[in-house]
Every structure is written in C-alpha cells, then in structure tokens.
Amino acid sequence: MDLRKKIFNKYDDFVLAEEKIDKDFLRSEIKLLLEGFSNKDSNCYYLLGLIDYESDDWEMYIESIVANFKKAIELDKENVLPQLYLAHCYHDQNNLKLALENYQKVDKQKLKEFQIWRYTKLIEQIGYCYYKLGDKQKGEEYFEEVLVWYKRLPEIDRVVPYELISCLPKKHPIVIEIKKCETYLD
Image 1 (cartoon, rainbow, N blue to C red):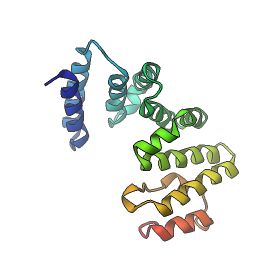
Image 2: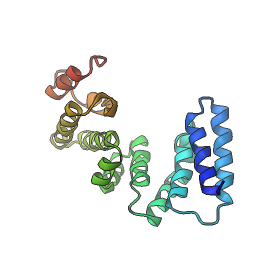
Image 3: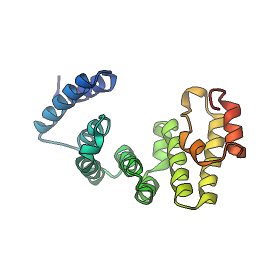
Image 4: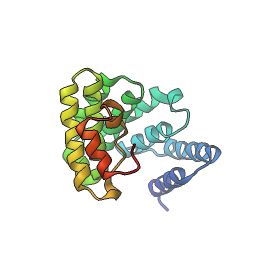
C-alpha cells in the first residue's frame, strides 16, 4: 500500500475512533507517517491541521493548526477545506472579524459542489459573524439564504442551524420558519 493511502486510511480510523486514547494514538501515528512523507502537498498539511483541530485539547495546538492550514492554502489555493477550517479556527477563538475575512475567501461554488451541507453551514457562519459584529441586517440576509436552502434540501443535507438560532429572537420569522421544518427545535 502506498504511504499516502496508508495515511488517509489511518485518518479514516481516527474519524471513527470514539475513545480519546484511540484518537490520540492514531493522531500520533498519522503525524509520524506524515513526518516521513518527503513530498507533502496541500492535503498533507490540511490533514496535519485537521487532526489537531479535531482533538479535545485543540486550543493547545492552535498555532500549529493555523500554520498547517495556511501552508495547505499556500500550496493549493483551490483546496477549499483548509480555507474553511482556518476560518473555523478564528471563529472558535471568537475572533469573528478574522473568521469573517477567511470565510469570505472560501470558494463558495466549489464548496457547494463538494458538499451542499458545508455550503449552507458556511452561509450561516458568515451571517453569524456579521450579526455578532453588529451588522444585523447583513447577518439576517445570510440567515434568509440559509432558510431558503433549508426548505429545499432533503433532511440528510441539512445541518442544525445553531448559530442562526442563537442570534435571532425566538419569534423572528426566520426562526419560526426553520422550526416548521424541524420539529426537534424548540
């Protein structure tokens, strides 16, 4: 089996692992394999950032996570996922201005073609950033787009719009419409 395939198979195991000890072991294995990989491309750096980002103690690794996502972007500007996850890092740190700046750099069309649920979540996150940064009108415009997508997508392609619901008042027309689509939301 070639090394690249072995690395990505280990990552699949990492994603499926439920116990922290198993995840930590697989993370170490993946890092060791990637260290021995002489020809690291954008996906390798993306994976290095991702395995730390997906750890319970990701905040300890945030500098290297950001550096790996930036290196992945530098090597391949067409690779949308490192750009998306770089924005997620800033979002998770509550640096919404930098998160918004990086969310705006994501190739939305490419992301939409890749996974529609990621696209609708991106639109929601952009709306969240605008809303929390004080531009509530612009935020609501993005939330309205999320609602449009939410109504037309099959249930399997929908992601719970937590950020939208956390921003808008419970009686807001967008929230009311979202709740009509999903009975588990209250």
